[in-house]
Length: 176
Image (cartoon, rainbow, N blue to C red; front, side, top):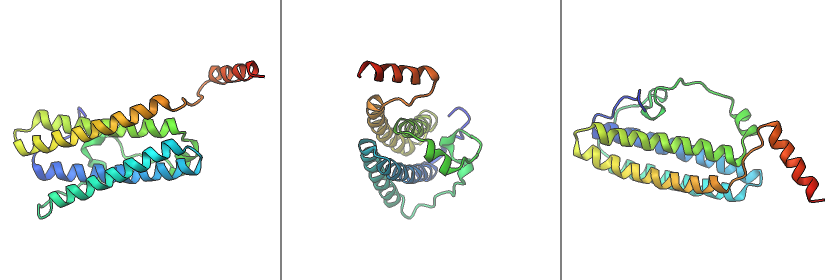
């Protein structure tokens, strides 16, 4: 988050939070659907639960900021992306290659970036309302991080090297 533009006021905090939660709800719903179709029911259930929580957060934040003029955020300027380039990889390629472990790692990274944005807001703003909201949002992200880290610890690590495949083949020979 070192390059991110600090959140300056409550409207910016709400705008970023709503965009973060909206993106997370969509991503989690997509991951849940994909993983369900590919037989990873436990991980799919976690992503379904996260999608519901993220959507509830969107609705709550929208209710709380109702009537407040929020700045329009362009996707390539989102603070929580740390000014990363807006490169797109084909969704079909990503989903074709994705394992439950990969989906969890992607989600964990997103939750940690969002949490870091809120921590940055807490550290840099003088506005007590921004600090209060950012603390609340950072706490929610920490809860999601814990859930994902727990699931990640239980998820099989994908095979990524020749040594991984050799270990798998060796283990299968022992069970004959």
